[in-house]
Image (tube, rainbow, N blue to C red; front, side, top):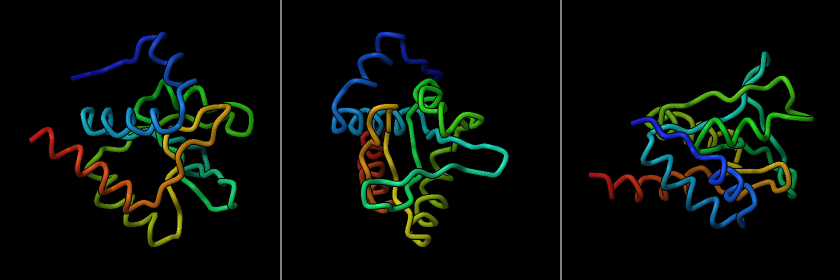
Length: 131
């Protein structure tokens, strides 16, 4: 099943409050079984939160990541990560490296910063609904 958000959906979600974008992210990622992040020639990109912690920016679809791939992130491109790889390798690796997840940042909002294993719990709970 391939899903592409409508222009209206993109507009509404990029201006929605952080909690709403987080819920949407959890639902869509569990449903589509992939996560999107940004990559450039040097590797995966990270952002800093207000506490100066390294965070991996994550989105539920390429369209949302593309909106963020400007200014400082110009030259970066969205790349999908299969959900099983994300859950079994990425999240434990992020936790080990002391990195956090920046869920669904927009050009005007850094997104919801969450610990990797907390994100794992939320995704796993949502995935249970699909069994």
